[in-house]
Amino acid sequence: MSKNQFSKGQIILSYITILRVINGIVAGAAAAFGLVLSLPIDVTDIDFLTIGLVVLAAMFVSCQAMIFNDIADREEDKINAPQRPIPSGKISIKAAYVYGIIFACFALITAIVIDIINNLYGLSVLTAIIFGGSLDLYDFKLKQLGFWGNVTIGLNVTALFAYGALHSYLVYGGTFQYVPIIVGAAAGLGNIGREVIKGLPDVEGDRESGVKTLAVELGTKPAAVIGSIFLFCLLTGGGIAVFIGLFYPIGLNYLVSIIIGALLIALVLFLAVAILINQSPKWAYTTKEILLIVYLVFLLIFIVDKIVALLIG
Image: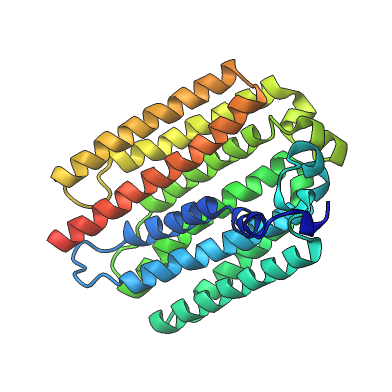
């Protein structure tokens, strides 16, 4: 289908949707969670500029990875998701490569700025290169391995939390905080589960393209069981975030976070059980989308909670 068959608005929308901005925001929130929740309780001057730049850097890395993911998946997307920008013809392969490289450059530039203003001597740049490089390797190579490609995504998620915690320790000192990394490890395991579930609706296209997802290799029911088990691991991290108190005394604002966090944990529990009962493509797609929103809301409530606790002393 020729590009001139689409309106200018459709093409612009395609350049936005290919970025999967919500995934980038979640990535940024994960790094910010590790950073903010590791801040010493006596910090009075919160560096919001750096927090914003960390979120942007993670978002840019995620966005470039999403673009390259659509490039790598263009053949199976002709079967699984022909409406996406590349298989539909709204964005050409050449334009997509240029677009991905631009966002990779944005990520590196932002990381350089973070390192300069915080005297981190390349930590952010190195993290961006490793994070982005491993995601791109996943897009073009590791995804074909199915489950082990899913593990790569989980490790990257955990690394974002670890980067935030290490950043906070190097800039503000104090005691290195491990709880955000434990939460990040649980989030990484939960993301492995989400990736496994993502494979449930795409069996036909993945099989045709030689992508060895667990759904292709084992069938949808066993894959759903494995995905559900990893979601139960996610509940562990959620429980830690809700009940430990994350380094500061419980106040009224923290009680609100506990209530919201507990409701989100209950929702994940429901999703983990529901996918065992229903593996239909529509429900699997709905599950992975809901999980993404749950991750974002959960991270944000505790980030905001910690910032409020620091500001009000």
